[in-house]
Amino acid sequence: MKARWSLLPLCVHPPLEISEQEKEILEWAKATYGEERDNPFKEEGFFVLRRKDNQKWYALLSKIGTKNVGFTADPKEAFVNIRFDRESIALMYDEKIFFPAFHMTKKSWITIMLDRGLSQEELIGYLEKSRQLAAKK
Image 1 (spheres, rainbow, N blue to C red):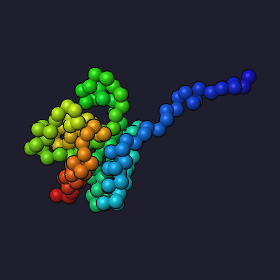
Image 2 (image 1 turned 180 degrees about the vertical axis):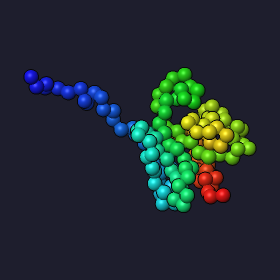
Image 3 (image 1 turned 60 degrees about the horizontal axis):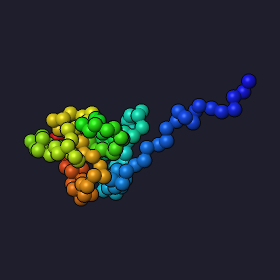
Image 4 (image 1 turned 90 degrees about the vertical axis):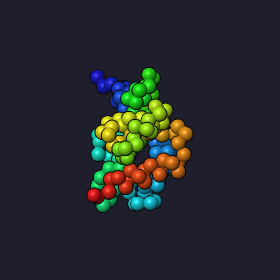
């Protein structure tokens, strides 16, 4: 007997939306350095920006549950992990926008929750620093 319906539509998740600040980050990277997002992971919602000259990552953009950064509720939100100056990284943590790095070393990376009040100018400044820290030594 041939089934008239399928469970497949119930198992397929819609693609995750890209947040406004994620779009702005991607546009900045492409316009400024000709660098586009890379998807080295199988999991949807995770992608990186890497330098063209040495292939080192300077940003990991992700959609993760907020429990991963200490909240009690767990909606998926947009985050970016960036390289950060080791001497001042701990001074940045405010548990609202800036968090210890998720999925990266906490000694040299920091996690920023996007679309939470950080201006685009500030965010681009942090991304520029991160990109510089990923330069060849």
